[in-house]
Image (cartoon, rainbow, N blue to C red; front, top):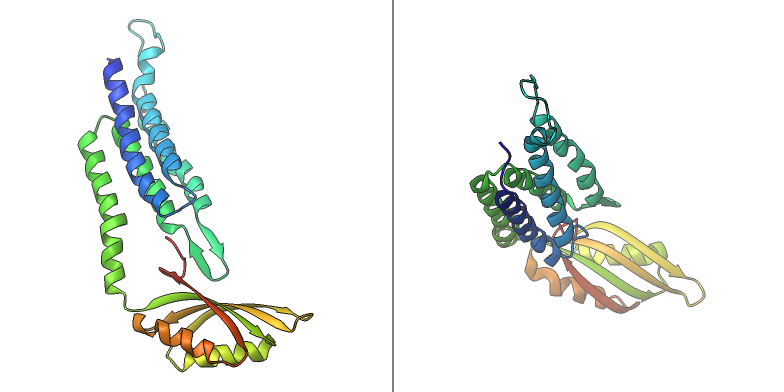
Length: 235
């Protein structure tokens, strides 16, 4: 028999709340797929799940008709379809990859929506709790465990070019830093260069030393530092 209107509203409402909770965390991390995207994925998945299990009751089949319905067929395509949305959240920037965690959270939110659509609220709540634990608590644990630090250094200097890049990389290498990526722009009219360098330091306490080493280069005019959590900047 079909579910009641109250049960229908309850399933959709819980999918909105759980999907929105995970989306809010992504929104606070300034990801492209944030609160609204995760909420809509959860809501649409719940709707598809309800449709899969309930549509047969609204087709007005004649009494005594023998009808075979595979209720999993429509819902199973959610798993396939969400892959395209998750793929759009993954960005490649040179050697860096961003958005893997967001893509995984979108996939997870789709399953949570399906749980709510099927009326399996306990499973949906437990899965949501596990995902919030992974996104919030484990992130803090991971940051405490990691001793290395990634910096994006922007250096403005007189002269420059390949020679200037070599001096910068040499100053950082002395500290045990690893230069992951380097880009530079040379302004020939003013004979100045702007370098953008991605650096991995073995210890956090070497950050000040790295900045000082760059400032001690005679040609350096200004050094700007941005901390990043990993090569992907944000996950």
